[in-house]
Amino acid sequence: MPRQAPQIRDAVPEDAERLLQLWAETTRTGEGSEQARRDAEQSLANLALNPDERLLVAECDERIVAALHLQRGPISPLSLDTAVHTSYLVVLPAYRRHGYAHALMEAAVTWAEEKDVEQLSAFTDGNRETNRFFARLGLQTVATVRLVSTPALRKKLSVERARAGAGTNRHLVEVLAQRRSARRRQAGA
Image 1 (cartoon, helix red, strand yellow):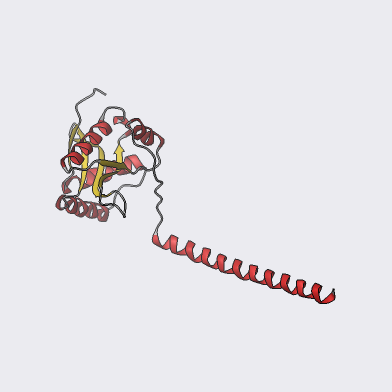
Image 2: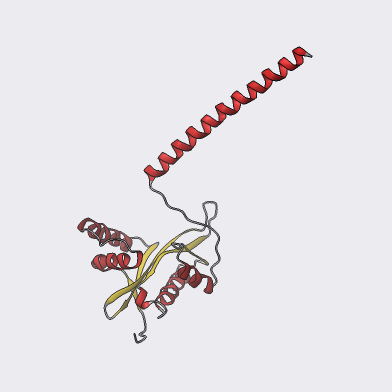
């Protein structure tokens, strides 16, 4: 495949179907439903109205081949400093190592500079190739991000609470038994 200069632009609601195809091809999820397309269109429209958020796409021959989400926000909950947080870097396998991710990151840095933001973070999906790409750019690992559905976490928390409660009662029973044994020994001595 010949190298072409990546064309980077902001995603628009009309890109919804092509972005869903990109996500399906890069994340091995199924094709989007009609509801998923409507949700994506609405999300893209919302992005266009938010000055602190962007979804960049890279095109080749009018095909969206890569994307990167950008969001400006606090670097931490206790800091007034802001950062541009990047996430959902996806590149079609056939277009990897052709400069699309690099061009998207250059656009992210340019946007950060325009917004007077001095820090940039990258959230990844754990993909080895993606993490190596970010490491080559000088980004360091500072956190691990995990994801769970609300019902699944509620269930786990309930099980953990029940287990902890049972463990506390068992421990109390053991302590009381040891005290009784100690009293008997003292009374017998």
